[in-house]
Length: 121
Image 1 (cartoon, one colour):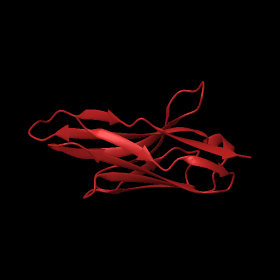
Image 2: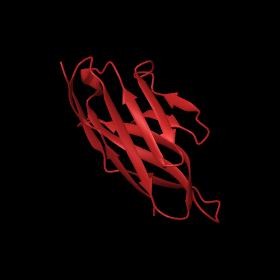
Image 3: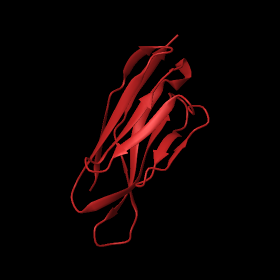
Image 4: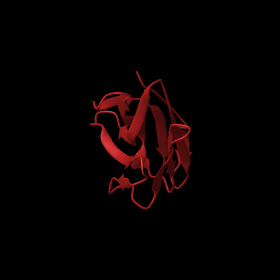
């Protein structure tokens, strides 16, 4: 019952920057971890970055030092600041959230529809 909507993708030159946003909506839930995945045509979806409810972060080795994930718990949003972009960063970026319905211990998973990031040489 949690809906995620991404925004901020686009076309940029190598070395440029983009900031992706993801908004979560719904009722009677709390969010644990939120993160970003990406998928290029013909490739499998891969983890880019994740952030816990307390702010602990983890990144794929390929983006460390260039990408920064952050969140606003009050607004139930997560962001991905992408700097020094490379052509190999091209792909559809998906927002992800691990959440728990209020009143139960069950962990559920939500995915957004994705936003396209294209980095030209």
